[in-house]
Image (cartoon, rainbow, N blue to C red; front, side, top):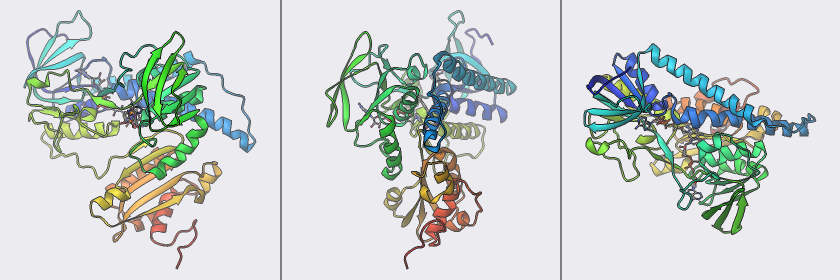
Length: 477
Ligand code: FAD
Ligand code: NAD
């Protein structure tokens, strides 16, 4: 729709069309609010669809296919090494993204959500100016009753690597699949470094990871990370812990990187560097200083349980509103904010927010671990079922996995779940349901799970807690 300088009055303006923003806009429209969504990239889906969750998972699926095919050799099934046709791979990934983006456009149209392709900025506490991506289009002014900030996040640069040249990738550049580097250095052993490192290693790159802290995936329980770390030892050329990059010099054919860390070489020559050391909220260029909203020292926008900011008419959701920076958290917050604005008694009060690292094996966790539960004064007991006790895992040749449940000791209530192994990202939802429904060990043990499946390890963990495991030795009397 074409708009001049005359302000347009609307019930709700959503800034940002990522998972948080589109979910909020759709729910608000369904609840009868006239909703305008402003999105700088012109298409709905945000970082997640265009340069994040979806393309990375498409490529991780292919990476698993490549490694599974190679490992089938041990079972007597041999495939020739794959030939990667990069143009077709890029087109295939882009086609999934386009299909999903078109789907979102259609859903917005069906709800009469007006999507403006432009960049939004607050002019004051009740007005937003939109500069359109198409320069021929004059800026527009929207006067809002409520606004939701859903502007997401951007990669954090590493000091010394800010001038990112052609040899230094962020995750979006790595997902653009311009080349398969012969040698790739990944800076950061977190979600992105390990997921995209896995992709490029499967595609044929020699991958080296440098991680600042003393372990991969800092913050995740070590027993869940260990099986992944062992497998990555075989997939990656090298992982250097307690190591940082001190300088990078780009050459015609690659980059010379200087490292500082025990056991790490002082210098490394690679073709490409991927920087993945975290993301920071997009709150700086929104004109928030002209509103009552005050981002915190890290740039996150503080919100209450309804996702309302210090300015009562402005809400914030998703990555810009705080950790964890995950798409499903953004969606859940978006629905709460829209319902709160529509006058519904909604609040964002989940018992847990699940997290998954989609490596091979996948690592997934939700709720309270042993240490966190004890810190809250809860008496807990954690039980772990090794997947060597799972017929399905053994038949898949993937007995390295674990299913770990934390129970409240006195009641048997499920407080936390951790899983490492193939499909952990799907399996975690059973744990989430148990946590949200306040299920106890008897509920899990009494639920008949299909055999042979990995999900049986949930029932087995509950049986173990109750002292009567079937596929593990009986408890000592
Ligand atoms: P975003 O998706 O970042 O969307 C924000 C949108 O706002 C953007 O489209 C941007 O163009 C727009 N915008 C910003 N400023 C303005 C402005 N002033 N005016 C108009 N528009 C503006 N999470 C998961 O849960 N699972 C995964 O598997 C996963 N994989 C990931 C893989 C990668 C490589 C990356 C980088 C991230 C991944 N994430 C994953 C994280 C996930 O992408 C984010 O948590 C999620 O996208 C956050 O959603 P959001 O709606 O807050 O913001
Ligand atoms: P991250 O926080 O997951 O990992 C960053 C890693 O870099 C950490 O291990 C950190 O210790 C390390 N690091 C920091 N500074 C360093 C330095 N100078 N040198 C070497 N290592 C350094 O961040 P990310 O991988 O960039 O991902 C950003 C966010 O995106 C994630 O936190 C997550 O919220 C989201 N994400 C989620 C998924 C998923 O859900 N599967 C996938 C990708 C991204």
